[in-house]
Length: 333
Image 1 (cartoon, rainbow, N blue to C red):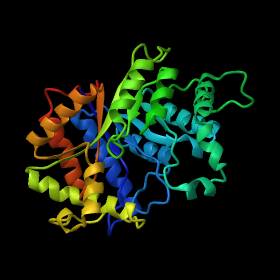
Image 2: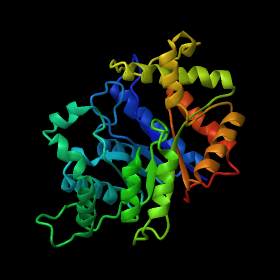
Image 3: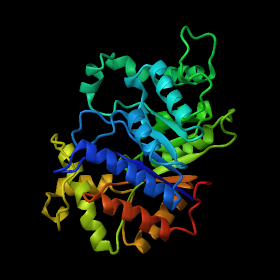
Image 4: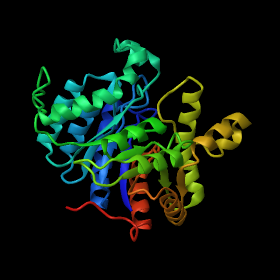
């Protein structure tokens, strides 16, 4: 089982955006040294606690701090953008870091409907055009002469395209186009099993893939004990509760016994969101990752999660990789 890293580039309370970017580079370099396959950044907008909105810029920064690990968008929310611009951005990244770039494409806005309006997009058409925009993006990289304008850089670039999803729609599109598929089960676990089954059943071989390739996301925080890991995870729990309450903020410090302080509806919401998680000691994390891999039969797992102290996130990656070393397949140098 290959392991990769999903980073939302969190900004912690008392911290700055510059610090978040510096920590992103350290996290990616740690992941590379430990043998993780890829480091992905996700596009989010209007969230003061996340610094990954300009995905291509963050990846360029991280790329210069690393040398082997694959770098990618997990993902770019394509309805927010013109395919030509994304072809130029990721064509540039592919030229800067040849053979290392992934381009995961999502259909959601990466925020609420304010971002759609702020980008002056047609709310109804933005998501409907997603399949055709994906195809146009493929044609841009191929330099198809039917396009009225060629992406430069972009022509001849070869980033690995992925379709991302948290519902059945992305699974169907990825299967139809013969592209690898990544499911956001770390925050949207409800349709995981149905989406993976649909993708595999309907997969059409392509020049990119001759068989389905699945990556599934899971929240992972490893620490020396289950209790310590649960305490560290309380920072994420607080962030989710605030987000769902309409009051998003920066990543807060951990709070002992946080869940016990919440009303039952909030606890139920957290438990539902965290159904796909491996939080605990190395032994606990190993067992939960093995169970999740058995359940999904995924070709690769991508671990999400954040800690208030960035050094403990890096420590979590280390403990996780060491715990599952017999199962892991590190990226080739």
